[in-house]
Amino acid sequence: MKSNYDKFPVVAVPGAAGECVAGWDGCTERLRQAITQRSARRTVLLIDCYPGVNETELLERLAISLSAKLVLRASEAMLSHSTIESLVAPFLRENEPVFGFLADLTLEKFFDSEKIQALKRQVAQTTEGLILIVGCGARLLADGDILVYADLARWEIQQRFRRNEIGNLGVPNRLEPASIKYRRAFFVDWRVADRWKRDLIGACDFMLDTNQPSQPKLASGKAVRSGLRHAVTRPFRVVPFFDPAPWGGQWMKQKFDLDPSNPNYGWCFDCVPEENSLLLGFDNIHFETPALNLVFDQPLGLLGAAVYARFGAEFPIRFDLLDTMGGGNLSFQVHPLAEYIQKHFGMPYTQDESYYLLDAGSNAKVYLGLGSGIDSPSMLRDLKAAQNGQCPFPVEKYAQSWPAKKHDHYLIPAGTVHCSGANSMVLEISATPYIFTFKMWDWGRMGLDGHPRPIHLQHGIDNINWERTPLWVKRNLINHIRPLASGEGWREEATGLQEGHFIETRRHWFDRKVTHDTKGTVNVLNLVQGDEAVVESPDNAFAPFTVHYAETFIVPAQVGPYSIRPQHESATSNYATMKAFVR
Image 1 (spheres, helix red, strand yellow):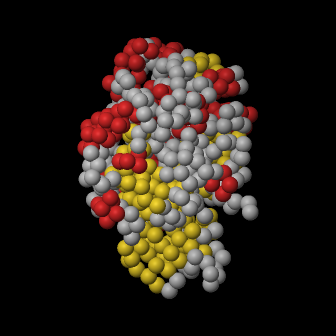
Image 2 (tube, rainbow, N blue to C red; image 1 turned 180 degrees about the vertical axis):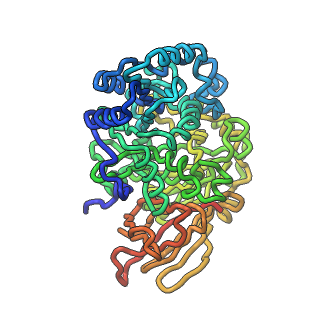
Image 3 (spheres, rainbow, N blue to C red; image 1 turned 60 degrees about the horizontal axis):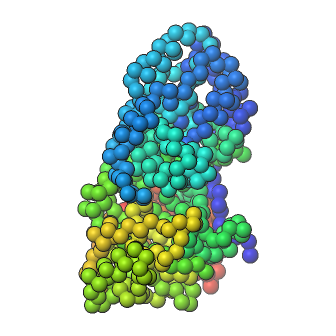
């Protein structure tokens, strides 16, 4: 049976006909019209860019087509490469292939003030014609008469890292390993660029979607902002993306009609706004913008006042899928304690998480917590011996394994050793800082690049909670489910997360309409059972929204009351959603 999982969900923007054009010819013509409409002797066209945008392509396509009299690249005013390396060095520790410290730098710090003044003088001396300034930080060189912001999603940036097409902000390191470039982007480039672009989203005249090479899309800033405002009035989905893994499985490939030529798919990121895209529909053109732009532009409507006050313009809940069906075990790992992640990495909160079993094979299991009566010095010796290649680490000797079945829910507070076993399909629900996983043993296997995957043994050892033994785990972390309410054809259960953690999860079983209410805080849901369901507004504030099995969707805080019902009601239907929100 063909999958109904929607891999390219779109938010249709009402009343935006003609506001978006596709292709270089259309984009160039729209910009030419904007320049002509000014009827000015001189026009300064700024195209500010997110790091990773192909600035060379922009210059080549626009400079000649628009007959620019002066063409400048913002990168000409940047500090020397060696100076930039010194600037970012405190945030990128040596001998740390994965981790760093979140940078508090601003984009201005990457620029040389004397170089900026020299380029500004060139702009001032050009008194007629078109002045075209392109690059990250273009707005530092001139106020500009027309401002375009060229953007792309972090997922596409990662693909360009892997293809060695781009390097990091201000340095020519294109040929460095993708993992090294990703670390630098995560801890430095993206923090710097996000601070810069937050103001540009509200100020730009146009936004340029550069996610598809040589296939740009240009929309008016007004139309994009209208689309972002519209998105928080209704349920919506971000664009999921899929990635293979050394332990990856076959379940998603079959259920979601993914490319069968790929050996496996381990990950599906279907609600990670820092990395996912949002598709805005302008008639028949789908404009791709980073979902993070919605968080930046509409934080109150999306998150709600209480969540925004607590976390700022940051989406604190993450849903993703982990597929080991026909694959292998995940790495044996632990997440950092709150004080540790704050001290060592500059992250204000940690990754408390849970595994919800969407599906499971007959022999599925989850490693969670330590075994009974283990000798911690022996465990540490065996971990170090495994890291040194002396012998495999005997996970079964030290970690407790639990049989796993469909719809089980395992809570994983920070400090708890854990690992999803083979033949499981996991919906992972967690706080957002997803990069901070300390692998202590990876079953002796290689990464997809043919090299050993990084092990973070000392970080892991420093964060193990040695009191998470079988009795405690069973009482507190496995199917910690409490009935809350019920009615004809539905029931609601609290399933965690642990007391003291900021995410609450609820499961609703239903065979007819069941009512929900955001109560002023963002809701994230996944249809964990049932083929198709419909989300509706009690007062028709938004059009009915259809979701399919295993799809994650977001209900913005400002939506308020909403309901979910089966698409095809019958006496034998049995549907369920998992919902997460900030307590």
